[in-house]
Image (tube, rainbow, N blue to C red; front, side):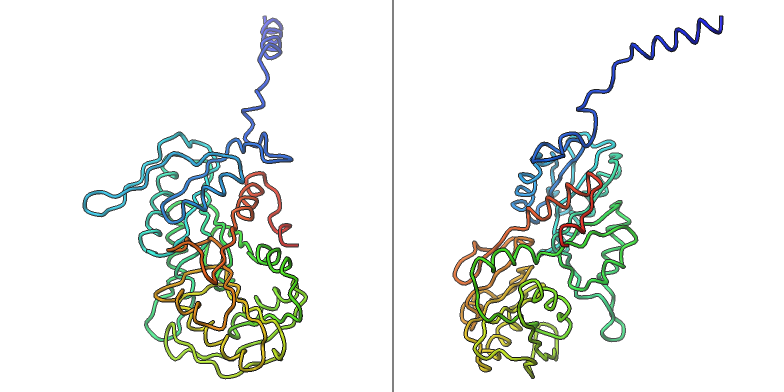
Length: 345
């Protein structure tokens, strides 16, 4: 009797159909822009154009979700498709209006978490509150750490971000962080210009490491600006450390906010003999009258990425490059369990 049972079980197992290829979560991801099965890409309201471009890179549709407002202004998030067990990515920079966009991100992550998503990754191209990464005076918060805690507590299991204001912010998270560098996007653009006698200028001492790495890839010299900030968003330039005489100067910084710093730095290095001045900034915050300030400055071209949507279309001196291919490839590699650091080696 026992032998008959074993034979029946073995025979039933042989008749059981093999799983179809489409059931494999990573099927179709190897060797080309085929659909990433098992991957769900969602977007809130902060930068929908970038999310659309990333979806095109991955060849997947954006997930069905509604991010709106109730009559009293409270945020209403509703995920309108099944995400159980899926690898979910939420694209949302925490740019202006920063508190609204941060809250949208937290509520979308929470909604996915409560819908039993298999894994949730917050894709934050621009990480707001990053400049508040330490106590600069008594009785002030470390806001970057607080925001990191909120994102983790909401249910995110990984973060993908681009050019943090300070690299150590990665350590504020108790979950893995993939810190992408936008330098390859700028390098491709600048190399096509065939610039001569190039020096890379760090607008302050804190950005020297970032500027040095960029200068090395650009095969350029390095110049450092000795700058002080008497108060937030106000800068005073004291010294230019290095030679810019007769050179093409490329100012490199992680962000441009009011534009005051770059304007003063550009004027200073023009006084020291720079013949051509370009500015490269990953995040184009461009608060207040920053665009008008840049148009009147010594800077001939300001190059930014689309981590933050510009309030107006790029025009005049401003050029915007897309990081969608970089972020899309990072998402694909993360989904497939491949190395992301190889993108920058």
